[in-house]
Length: 210
Ligand SMILES: [Zn+2]
Image 1 (spheres, rainbow, N blue to C red):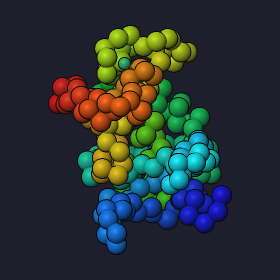
Image 2: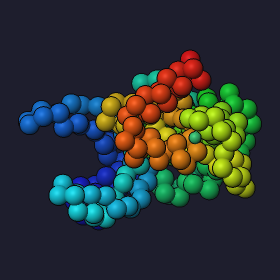
Image 3: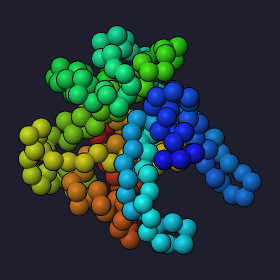
């Protein structure tokens, strides 16, 4: 990776804050807040000419204003956030109730914490959020209300979906993330009625989370 991509990825290691600006129109941008990079994957995406190219998709966590400052002393000591996956999985197994998972999904380290601590806390929160929405769904897709298509070792297979793109300023929060079956998830991204379908998901979440 080079330049911009490398700089984003290095947020995980050197801890400079990522600030998200949205291109509104020529010469105008909107500031959406700050974020941490907690990982990435590669996939084929069309470029500006519609040609498929290999793209890095960064997993950014927006810093939310609606967070509860939690004690993060229990979080594992790791070299950097890329090493945090296993110890955090272990930590999350200790959370048994939906209320405990929800609290973890909203937890954040103190803003005065050092970068590594903050990033590990962000990663913990992100994983807790995914686990929480799946637990909340109780084995049924929250989009079409049908049972998850199959079981995994960790329970019914459902995929967390963000109903607000980061560019819309939606932070990672239980009320913006819905557990979907693969069909509903693809529909929310690729269907001709994707926008309308997403709107029904937003309304469903209001019913679920209040
Ligand atoms: Zn579904």
